Length: 211
Image (cartoon, one colour):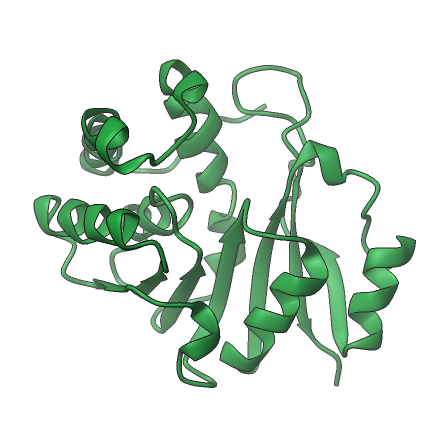
């Protein structure tokens, strides 16, 4: 399986590693990721976040809104990899939002803005792409994402291995999304192999409005 960092410049990879160091340095104060994940932060969070890059490949400009950014996964990771796009990170927990602002400033990410509030209060139609990872169930995510998207926008939803029963255009949750005007497809063609092992880490689904 190809590495998630294939195609990224050496400077980008160095910046990603610096970001990972910031997460480790500030994790105790800001509760950014589970303590058990610290030793596998690069594989479990950084590389996993990069799996969404194919879902941004069609954009040469525009705005990505990351819902519930937490420690910056996937929002800040993707912002490092795609500096030509504007990123808005919505995180309603104040201490995590403060970390996101600190990390963006420290890394010189002038194209990143942080909103310390619920994504539901953001302006309608502000996003070309919405991303969300480890936030809530698919139906609730689509309810949050849909109003934020431009007419031709897409939501990239990370689904963990424990939601493996949810498949494109099948299953109760997918049916519920389709009834709310969603079209579902798999966004990561590499399927569900985790970046560090053969264990399932889940898939990324692209959800758009039906026409």
